[in-house]
Image 1 (cartoon, rainbow, N blue to C red):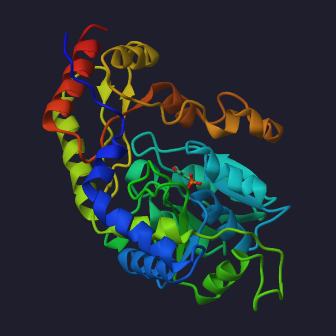
Image 2 (tube, rainbow, N blue to C red; image 1 turned 180 degrees about the vertical axis):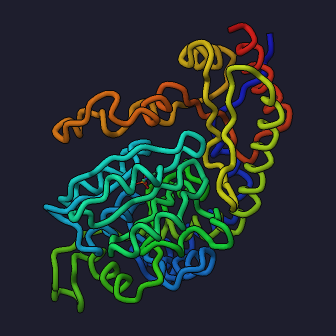
Length: 374
Ligand SMILES: *Cc1c(COP(=O)(O)O)cnc(C)c1O
């Protein structure tokens, strides 16, 4: 029996590599006494803005809040429809409902797992106020076609870039294309903090100003509240930790891409295992490496991997339109078939940058042997 094991993600080894630098940054931040917003958050905002090629970057409490505040800043509320793919993390749709608008779910492209542009076009009505394309798993959505559909109709475009920091679409960097782009620093993202955190980037001066005001209760100046906003700010401690990590992001993305190429080679020609193709011109940063299991039971493979101490996760087991939270919207099974099929077949494998060749070999070997037995 093999003693090998491969976790889905290895945050401890990343921390150990940066421990001294991180502890120093934490100590300096604590000693400064400026713990909410302040110079560390501002420096980190400027760094992210430069990195993604956006004029403004606004640190907020989470990726979910980045979406919610973007929706609010674009004026979305009751009576408005906001379109989202039905294959995403819950937050994409939760934010729409929480701003008072109605989520409208559309299907995905079976290859990229991203929003299907024809479904999007068919779902647009005169109530459509915004669209949230999700750059799922690290690969950009088809932004040219989306911008073309939305631009002429004055529909806002909010990019859900929570899984795609550092990725590109053609020559453009994710974070500088839509009206706003929303990033998450949740620990499992490619740039993860030691807790929650998020960022909104935009090239629109007016939107940036609104976002800065609504993250502090709508107050400007202090105690003079122009609108009802939120308490949604990035902590200085998170900014300090993330500032240490951001210098490594590019190298980590390259590690993920190398691991993805290793899986692509390893699973080539294995019947019943479909690897995720790169369908958009640009840089895929592989927050997840998500295969489709098309022969045998996907859930049996999950159990098989668990027994052999290999981490895996189903992102996502349920399509958003069929979740109980959205039952009042009236979607039925079969209404978005490509999403529904994906939820039955997908499985994400370990892709973290620190994974060794030996660990990856073990994953490939184990999955392949299982597939051949089906
Ligand atoms: C993680 C994630 C979010 C939410 O980010 P949080 O920081 O956890 O609030 C939103 N959308 C997608 C696609 C995500 O993966």
